[in-house]
Structure formats: structure tokens, C-alpha cells
Picture 1 (spheres, helix red, strand yellow):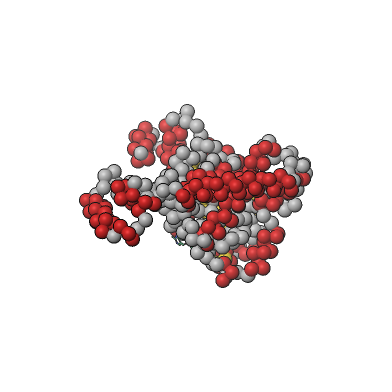
Picture 2: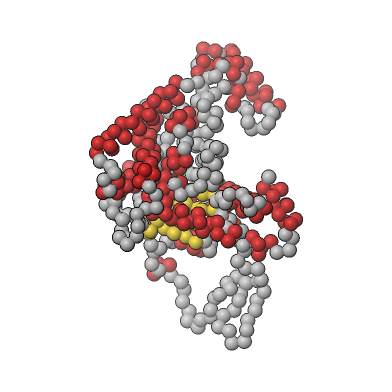
Length: 446
Ligand SMILES: Cc1ncc(C[n+]2csc(CCOP(=O)(O)OP(=O)(O)O)c2C)c(N)n1
């Protein structure tokens, strides 16, 4: 589909595709006027000559500032600015969405410990990044995620039944139980299915953004769309990150890269991951407009994403990088014990110090929109709703056994068919060894 689009586009504008597609430099010939204080080298068009030999020393440069709207007491910092540009009811919806993910995380982490699901990853401390950024995107935007952004699904309308069906790998899961838990996906919500190999989603996002750009050029009546691509700072150490940002910059693709910098890539702290100024400085290095925001401040995340979306669509498109700062309060996953590599007190300190949920709660309380009673009632309701879907999903049948083999190719290959038959023979020979009734249609489902 994308290649046929490219083919048609090239055919229509054969001579100067770069100019139309937004490339900054067209003419790369070397030119120098007599007496000029700089050369137009093709590789650095605005560099002045200097007779002072100075190495650029990042360690002496000021770190990029962190944009915040609201402080940790829930107070808007800049008193001259107006209130957030959304009705109070919407802010309360964000709050409830963050709370839903947070409560679900506690329940599902415990469920894994009880052996009821195989694996789980929580997003404690990062709910504000997911919900705040998703609130600024349009329903038709296309989204690529890593795995710690359940709040994006929640904000876009993924239901508790959908979360639970995927986690319990039952027959209502759209992936039919073929992915690890938390690897959700939804074509209806425009969210590509999460995949475990780190950073693969980043070049995919750039490619999708390039396709959107070409589609918009072909049909200007299409609604404007961007791609939003989420990843952790650890994933930004992969080569895929660098290739994706550079291609997005040189092809001017409408993509918002949203990096969650939570201080750890499993057991590797950021201090050991890089020596530069976070991930934000890399965006600048690739010529991408970049902002660093306080990820505990949902208003700052939302505003930065909203502006990034506007900029990403301007003049035919361009990438934007948002580095959202946070702290990974939880263990990396249910397979991790983070106290093996960081002090308990560090985590407790962060929990006390700041948190996107508590911060927004303070703002709501300061405005008289929230109180202890509402908090308790809401928590009880959300917990009950989650547990209802939890129980239903746990009891639901597993997908039919044949789905082990289907959906790779349109028809089963000879090899897959032979394996299916071998499995059938095996199950028929040892019927007492397997709970085939847990699967839709039992052995007939194979
Ligand atoms: C290509 C690849 N290498 C290594 C891993 C193992 N792994 C899974 S998550 C992870 C850490 C990622 O850290 P980060 O991107 O900062 O996200 P966070 O978990 O902190 O949210 C690693 C190394 C993997 N899944 N894929």
C-alpha cells in the first residue's frame, strides 16, 4: 500500500520532490563570496569561520529546562496564565483514567503473584505521561507504544473487558492469546499492537508518518493526522531510535516522539546509559524541535503534546520530540526485583516526593472539585468494575486451539498443517493430560 503510494507520488512530481516534501536543503553546491566570514559547506551551511580553537563541551552547557505548568502542590506556577483549556469534567475524566490504570496495576501485579496470569508490567508514576499526551491527540491519529503506556489505551476508550481478555488470553482477546500479557493492540483505536523487541516501533512510526504525509499530499481533504510514538529512554539506546529520528527529520514526517525518561532501563540507571543531556539533546542533534516536560504534571504533558501536534502538521509536516521526565516507581515487571539494584529508600522518597495522580488530585481539591469522600467512592467503584471484568475474563474460555496456527498466512502452509495434525494425534492419545474443555470447542476447535 505504502509502496504504491510512493510510486504514484514520484510519478506525479518527478523533478523536485525534495522541495515539496519539505527538505530544508535543496542546493548542496559549495559557494563562497569573496570576504565572506563563512563557507557554505554542503554539510554545515551556516558555520562561521573562527580562529579561536574551541571544542564544544557539553558538560559546560546548561541542561535543557523542564516545562511545567503546575507544581507538586497542584498550584499553577505562572499566575498570569489562564486556567487549563478544558472543562473541569474533562480533567476529572483524566484523573479517573489515571486512577483506573493505577488500581488495575495493583490488582494485576498481585494476580501474577498468585499465578493467575503469567506476566504483568505496571506504569506507576507514569500515568500522567500516557493520559495527558493521549488527551491531546485526535481519534484518527496513529499510535505506536512500548509497553508502559496503558493510560493511552484507557484514555482512548479501550474497555476493562478488553484489558482483561488480553491479560487472561481468553477467546475475546483480539490477538487470540498469542501475545504476552500487556501487549495490547486495537485497530479500532488506531493503536498498533505492542511488540517486545525494544525500539522496533520507532522506525515503524516514522514510516507510518511518511505514509500519512504522502496520503495528505494526494488527498488534501483527508483529516490531518499525526503519528505518536512512545518509548523509554532505554529503548533510545537502540540503533532503531537513531535511524527513525534521522529519517523523520530528513523526510519531514509528522510524528511526535514521546520519550518516557523514568531513570531506569531495567537495572541500568540513566547515569550508566548516556553522558549527554538526556534524550532531548539527541532530538536537537537530529535537527528536531524538542521539549523536555515534567511527566508528573499532566497539564504540562497535555499542553506540550497539543502544541507538538500543531507543529507536526505545519507546512506539510515535521517531527517533534518530547522528553517526559518521571521516575519508575515500580519494579520493571513481575519478573524483576528492583531492590536488587536500587535502594528501597530511593523509591520511597520518590513516592512521597511527587506523583502525577496526587498532583492532579491536589489541583482538583484546591478548586473544590474533589474531596476524600469522592476519592473513596470513586476508588471503590473503579475497583469493583475492574474485579467484575477480571472474574469474567478469568472464567472465559480460551481461544480455539486452531488459532495456534492461523493468521500467519492466509491458508495454513503444509508444514503448519502437519504440525496441527500431529498436535491433534497427541491430544487424542493423552486426553487426561490436558484440560481441553478450557478451550473453545475443545478438541473440535483444533
Ligand atoms: C532489543 C531488545 N533488547 C533488550 C530487551 C530486554 N528489555 C526489555 S525492557 C528493557 C528496558 C527498557 O527500558 P526503557 O526503554 O527505559 O523502558 P522502561 O522499561 O524503563 O519503561 C530491556 C533491556 C528487549 N526487550 N529488546
